[in-house]
Length: 186
Image (cartoon, rainbow, N blue to C red):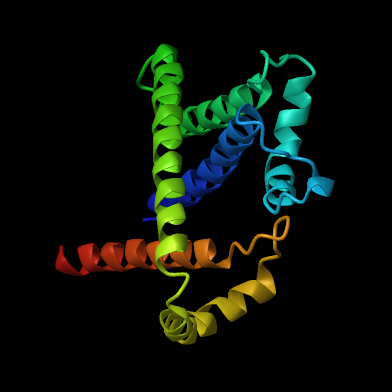
């Protein structure tokens, strides 16, 4: 049960960092202004999550045209570190080459799922912009759960991560519940 919780938190943290590194790369590739003064509302969030790893990598990995290879390498490095840590915890039974391959496949998966969620978010923003009463109703249900989290979790670059933290806590609660259930049944 504790290993599942650790794995979930590790997967979440690594997914957030790697996904944001890939978002940074994609925004740079698409020519989106990433400067904080440029009015990009995501820029402070992206920089606060990724600067710690992208800037040191940038010293050694140059950009290839508009492709921000430092962000790509940073995302891969974070995923590789995650797989290496889980590999060590599991008892190191597979080959090192498998770590590199698994990290590569996971990076492709993160790219595809990120694109999928961006499309879903874009669609939802257009569909529900007129449905203020639905948003008001959901806010009445969810805001009381988010308020205590917001007191503890600071905003990262102007982005409220409390809904993600709430989802993480719900998933941890499900893991604990399943663990308790398995102990009681057997």
